[in-house]
Amino acid sequence: NAGVTQTPKFQVLKTGQSMTLQCAQDMNHNSMYWYRQDPGMGLRLIYYSASEGTTDKGEVPNGYNVSRLNKREFSLRLESAAPSQTSVYFCASSDASGAYYEQYFGPGTRLTVT
Amino acid sequence: TQLLEQSPQFLSIQEGENLTVYCNSSSVFSSLQWYRQEPGEGPVLLVTVVTGGEVKKLKRLTFQFGDARKDSSLHITAAQPGDTGLYLCAKDGFQKLVFGTGTRLLVSP
Image 1 (cartoon, each protein chain N blue to C red):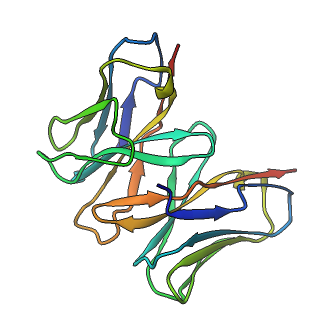
Image 2: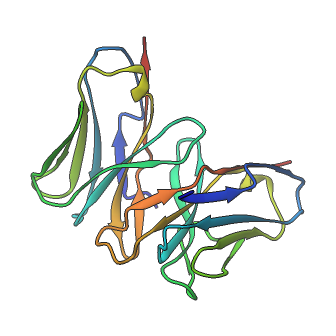
Image 3: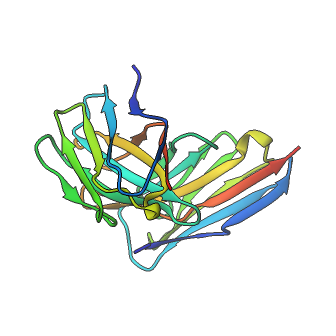
């Protein structure tokens, strides 16, 4: 099992450009999440999908959109990138049938917006 | 809004020393998870504690859930350079987790 995979690993964008971060999991998990991690800020939830066909905003959703393409895949789109979106982005999944939403993370995408 | 406070924010120690990091909340939570994140990688779950007063051990790591279910601690005995990383606690939220700001640990040989 590959677990949670993310592409790309690194990306540099110019202000105003768009891009989509891809995430896939092979653990048959119902729930998937997108976080951003900035120095001193811990992990902040951008969007999550509790089950296929549903998405909900997290703590910092502005400037992002998501698509739960199927049970395996959850993508994050930046429509018009801004320097404030420079960050490390993590995708995670969890088995919603479990009691504690223990999460499995991907390796991250390091995004720089200039 | 960060609902979980972790302390200290940064800890630099020598190999062989003991240390404790803390995770505190103003509200009660039903369960708490601890994760470790190594440089350049995603966080990895270490343990979940669910009962007030619960103590779990993972080799040299001891996790405790406060009796009042508003705090937790992680104690590392005889730290090794391989323990270096960012330690994150996370409390349960409806269908999701809320993470603390983390404690960054550096263990030097």
